[in-house]
Length: 313
Image 1 (cartoon, rainbow, N blue to C red):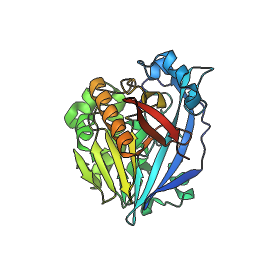
Image 2 (spheres, rainbow, N blue to C red; image 1 turned 135 degrees about the vertical axis):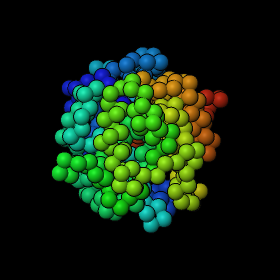
Image 3 (cartoon, rainbow, N blue to C red; image 1 turned 120 degrees about the horizontal axis):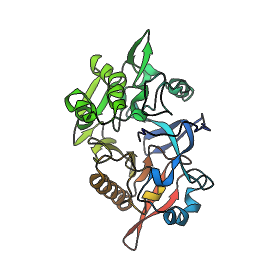
């Protein structure tokens, strides 16, 4: 998710607690920075009709849709995975003190405290072995770095940062900072990605990247050129952290519906359907980046169509 026209009057009602569960031997902990009504549904998912939202009202209210204002509810959150003795942080939120003139909600924001929330979940910056950015958007890389005496330096001093190569090329200087379409893209890269390259902590990957025998990164392009999902498989249990492949539960029965943040609409829809169908067939729990509530969904096929099954506590 990355918004050039976010509503600046959104107020946070985030849970500051961390919630965790196990997939086999892998421990997953969710750390929520904030959750709030964000944008009008037709602006958020242009292809999703009002009838679609109403048809799934029971699933959507209150954690994913505010019917009174017809706004989608989203969360900014980070997942911490403990696997094979290593600590992995997946996506790092918005960060503080960033110049984001194209996004009033994130511009010069000072209210975030991901390091503090992580500490309350038992994770110090120096404990983190790997940082996974599912893609390079401002609300997924912001706490990659923090300000230290006027310089942006890596927040996690001993971590390797895994970055999708296609995104690094597209949003970096070789790709003209996203082709120059949005000025914020250059700012995001310069304050949240370039310092990780400078420190020697960045590792670029493409296609598939095996973290260990329980965690595998896989390209799922469309939302951005290098958008990725992280598959978890341990002791016969499975989950997939899908990043921004999915922005709302409405897209589970309607994977053809893209968000307004998807750069390549056809690829995004194809990747979304492929990942959701595999999740239904293999019994993978689906964990999108921005879903509040439980944040973990079970997906099924019924009569050849994808359907939401239930939220997993």
